[in-house]
Image 1 (tube, rainbow, N blue to C red):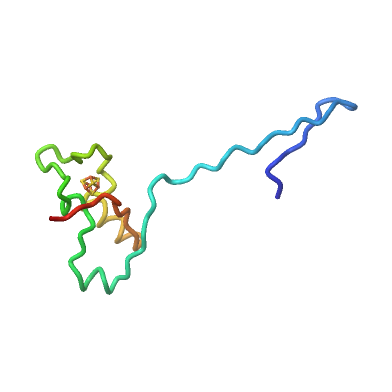
Image 2: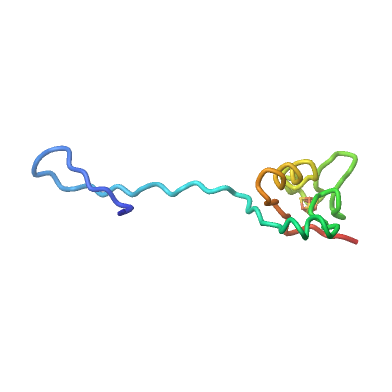
Length: 93
Ligand code: SF4
C-alpha cells in the first residue's frame, strides 16, 4: 500500500499529494528474557540494582524516567509478556 494519497476536490483540478503521517511507536524497547535464565540467575534488571538509583526519592540520579525500569514494573511486565524494558545505563558496583 502506498504511503501517498492523491485527491482532487473538483474535476480538472490538480491532484494534491498527502503524506501519511508517521506511525507512532512505543518509545521504550522491551527485551525478551528466557524463563530459564530468569529463574536460574540473579539478573540485575531493575533500578533498585543500579548504582544511579536514589532510594530516598525513588528516582534516577542521571535524570532518566525510571518508572519503567523499577522492579515492580519490570516484574509485572515480565509476568505479562516475558519481556522487560532493560535500561541501557544500568550500572552495578
Ligand atoms: S540509570 Fe537506568 S537503571 Fe539506573 S537508576 Fe537510572 S533509569 Fe534506573
